[in-house]
Image 1 (cartoon, helix red, strand yellow):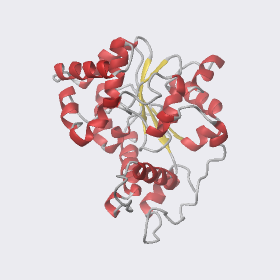
Image 2: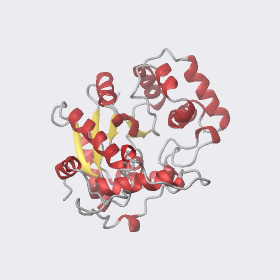
Image 3: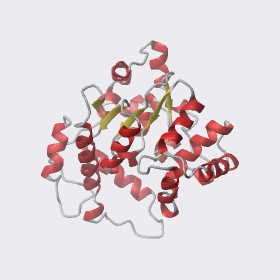
Image 4: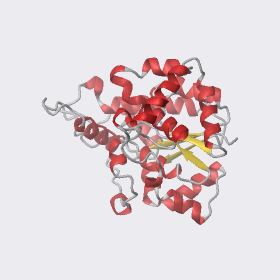
Length: 299
């Protein structure tokens, strides 16, 4: 069986679009965000992703519904939920083995943002899959944070005034914490097991840079394979799901998963000294954030 591929990046890093493209390669099975790296067992995942966090189960439920029943409906999603509850004692390794058995000989591809919220999550995946490939996708911290704030506001209660994030909810802190986790983790990997690449660069010329990623992964770079990657909308998960499992991916991507190159040309990379539009105090990025961003190639 092929080794899995994990895309590691903070949310709002173009992970849904780029992950959707990679997931359409004929030798890859692009999964929705299954969000299981934070626990050792299915029961641990179910215990964590409940109540207000239950939306985090949507990707796993949609995946199992599709694999078990060939469609994603309220009925098949409920059946997937029961299937998980009956196997709460299963390890995450057993869950991945089951998914791989359903998929066949394609490489499993996961891009769950939850993976990078804690160093131990990535270490747990490495323990289960010591030969897995890790694709570290970066995006400029300012544009990442602006995107995060826009998504947060879109989900705000329409009956309440939208307030600026408090400093402990500042998206810059989330970006830096995730990137700190990633850089510490990837520093433990042998050469070649991780590839770091700027999302802005990939989207400036997808065929060119996706071909290079495929070469790194040992995947075909034939024209038909690269053409398939240009159509993330062909995934069975590239749409809004049934009511009890709506997302499992970026909502904006699910509403419009087609690759629109006219919208992606010349993606801006603002100065790292720019004023932060989500801050009321006129502040700029912290020195620690700037150091990380420069390490990733941003100026």
